[in-house]
Every structure is written in structure tokens, then in C-alpha cells.
Length: 403
Image: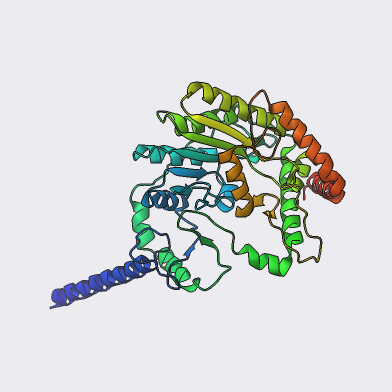
């Protein structure tokens, strides 16, 4: 009898656990927080999806495969929040693979994974980050390893049958009528909707100021260091190979991000401007080499950095609840500016203008453009440059005291 009772108990326990797993799976599939199943997508129920906090790379790659994308936007958060893959300029078939806090080798891993599944990109738009090439004193350089793009099938199981997934399913249901919820679109854009709340309560000045203080501290810490020349060369070469090798006719657009003039002024005030110029030259060297390696590909490098009419957008002052059109803060532009950038990349612009296609022959012209823009921006907004110097001096004092 005891054995029968024990087996009966285990059977009931097993059935209860199975029922629990089935319930969790049913809720997760219905909510579909990671856009993996597509059983139902209904406005007011589950159409809005939260920005994933785990399996981010896997979820985005699965999304790109699901929609059959052939154009890919790759880079860090500046790509993730700044470029709308549904832009008419792209003409359809695009996916935003940008991931906050990642570097060039994550993009390489994404492209290599897609190539391994038989996808040959017809267009790649890749952001190149200056900050990633800066070495702090004592920091060793070199190319980072290519991370695994897909970690087997276990992530699929955990994304279906876990408390974390159940929590994300509940978040999905709860966020549907929240216009300021943190969301990711079906094609990978994070529109930073939650920033609207911060803007309403804090204003743009505080958002810009906080990020400027953080950037000043980082730049001052790295200023005595060096540029990771070897790592930069290798990572760029690998990125260009992943895009263009055995892929004749592909368009590859590398870009220098449209940093706001506030951030550019911080580069200048922290003594990093010569390194910024050298970094650009190294990127251009690798682009020219790739153009020679892959003559049937169309490989371009666009410079959106500078102090022009977009980059020098006025920052609302303290207590001013005015809005910006182009920037959330100095490091992140809005999709409105991303749209301008994509139009300029894909349609072409005259040399000496925002987003010009760089080559070794017009690099000096680009430098002259930026110098001219700086003079105009400084005359219109001298406080932007004086505040940058003040922030750098403050960061230097704090770091000198070990704070």
C-alpha cells in the first residue's frame, strides 16, 4: 500500500508540474513578448512588445529571420534607437540588429550567423563607435572575440518555460495602453518612448547634462591612454569581410555617428581630438582596402560627425520645457535625424556636407567642413563649449582626488 500511495503521489505531482509548464507556455505564446511565435498579434492585447533584457541577440536574429530581412542595421544603441527599419528610404526588407552596449564584433557575429543560414545581405548599414577604440591607461587592446550569435536551442526552451518569460508576458499585457512604455518594434527599433516621461518631468537640459557629466568622466579617464590601433584595424577588416565576401553587389554603408556638438566639444576639451582624427583615418584606410578587395561591392563611409545645423541643435536651458527635434541627448539622436541620415547615405550628398562619402582624396575637405561648422556653432552657442570645458575640468579634479 505505501508504494501504491507513493506512486500515486508522484504521478499527481508530475501531472501538476506538466500542467504548470503548459499554463506558462500558453501564456507566453499568447503574449509573445519576444515576437517569436506569431500566433496572434492584436492591438490592445499583445501588439506592443517590451525591449528584451535577456537573449537580446538571439531574439533580434530570430526576428530578422522571421521577417525575411535582407537589409541590416548593425551597431550599438545609437543604431538601435536612431534608425527606423520601416523607413521608406530603405524600401522594405530591413531589420535593426542594433544592440545597446555592444561593439563591432557583435555585429560581425550577427552577420556571420546570417550568412551561415544562407542569407546574403543586399545592404548593411553599420555604425562605428569612437569610444570603443579608446584605451584607458594600462588597458590592453586587440580585437575582441566574435561572440556566439545563437546559443543552441536551450535559450528557446528558457524563453518559453521560465518565470522570467512569464513576467515578460505579464509586462506585455500590461503595457498595451501605455504610450510611454519601453518598446521594441517588429523590426527591431527601440524608439525610446520612455524618454517622453523623463522629458516631461525633468526637461531636456537635465538629460543632456547628466549624460554630459558621465561622458566627461569617461573621456577624462581615457585621455591619458591610447588608441587601440591594432584592434580597430582587425575588427573593421572582419566586419567588412563578413558583409562583402562572396557577396557581389552588396551595399555596405559604414558611418561615423552624428554625435551632438556637446559631445564633440567634450572630445576637444579632454584633449582627445587628435585621437578622434586618427581614428577616422584608420577607419578610412580599412574602407579603402576593402574597396580594393571587393571591387564588385559598393562600400561607402559616411561622416555625420561635426558641428553643423543638425549636430548643433540648441539644448533647452534649465527650467525650459522646450523640445528638441533631432536629439534625446548628445549621444543619441532620434529617428527623425536617423531618417535624414539614411536618405543622405542612400541618395548621396555633395562633398563637404553632412554625411558625405569619405575617401582619401576628400578627407581634408571634410576636416575643413567640420572646422567651419565649429566656428559657426561656437558663435551661436558659446555656452556649449564653455560648459564642456567646465565639465572636463571638474572631472579632472574629481579623478585627481580619487573620487
